Length: 348
Length: 274
Image (tube, rainbow over all chains, first blue to last red; front, side, top):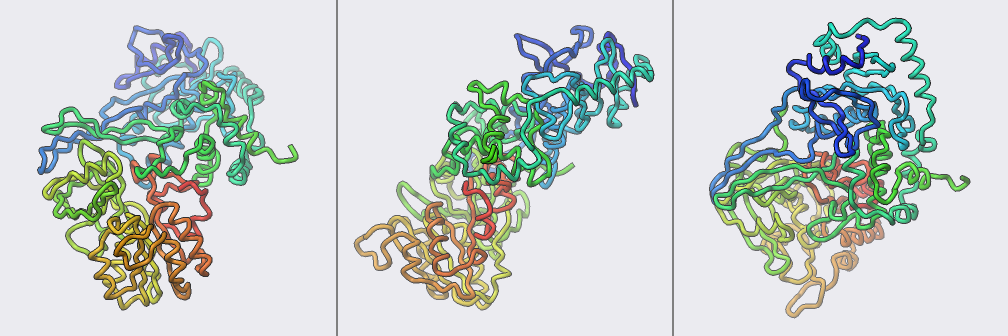
């Protein structure tokens, strides 16, 4: 299904989405983030660069409770699993790179041992994407990692900004249903609308972006350069803050811990929180042995996981080229520059 | 919808034994499931054990799959969770989920000589293989066990090892000279070179501190063991044991699902980050 929506009617469409909780990027304190849209309160505009954080929280929240426990010593505990009970959620303005993250996270969380917490959130989630007529960040590099400014992977709808209106293209059956909710607000696209969108797409594909050189051979070249001394050299400024992984739409490492509310009788919860391979104790055994003690090894782990290991397992990069790890790094470590330097062939 | 993979079963501690006292204390626990029939496991698989309120740890299952009724775990007091285990008493109830990972391919080892090389609490992960081989003694040829601790006090399964001498060759060692110690003094890899087990029709299985494993593999290779005759198990840090949390990641493998058991032929293909 493909329709035209006047921009001024975007809020009306959101208001018409009965049974859905809607989110869109809102600028607050200088930060663009996905916020719930309250009907008739905020007027939604999607003229934004890209959100500081990806929409990862909607499927994989920074902190979540698996179950609660109550136990008297020597007795069996009472465990109560806490499953997500969110209403169906629709997220407006998702950039194609962030859409691309979903099929990657699906591979990890849904396959082999299916994660019920991820699953329940995921099946209740719809993404209304916004094509990037111009790169929303100077660090965008989606084209180097198999993406595109108009990619629809992971999205239910792709909207193309045509100035005063959007071309709204449903990608999935859920996308069709979302349009149906406000069908009276839409009109049929004309040939001119479609031609205009087509031209924007061609122009966007031609827009220069930063690039990983010869990215098709990057997995192989990273493997060859595992022992490169450049890893340690390029990682030297790293302060181990982990922001590169927390801002990443596909980083999924986590920790599991028990939080105690009262010690006797014991009451508490088992929780999952985001974790990061950039922390030195991430891999440390309780014996003190640590497979990755050096900062260079941790930078290599982050980059190799995305551009070599995940590729070897699933045939696609685990990086979607959003550029957040570059923009957010306080010391200027740049995944593109690192990969290009480490994998540069000697004659370059 | 699938089951909740993070929700543990419940098991009661029915037996606690202090194996090793002191700073590097090791205790052995037997636990039996109380909320279900529990799970069957294979040699080399591990489980996530939890003391509620303290957290979860990955512990390899030390009992043979041929043992009915309980699972055995031998745990060194090291971190927050393992310390909580050392405070447990018979009757306490823990969380247990599993079994996780692959296993030692012992069915493929019928008719072979088995050489086990363990160090410290690294005897526990290979103990189910030893126990299974002993229970099916006529399926295997010679069974040799090398095992060492820092001192004689650090030798775990002392009684069981003495009993093992009835059916297997057992070579114990302590790192440093010690009064009254009758057997080898020196590191485990050195004891291996001292006895020079033959690689002929043999499989070597090793587990221990990472540095010990490294030298054991070097020495096995110099004795003529081929890469596919050497097996070890990577007991990496894990949080989920389900191939998701990322802690145990080595190269393209999540050790919890692709391992923990590796032949040296497979392991040497991975980056040396274990």
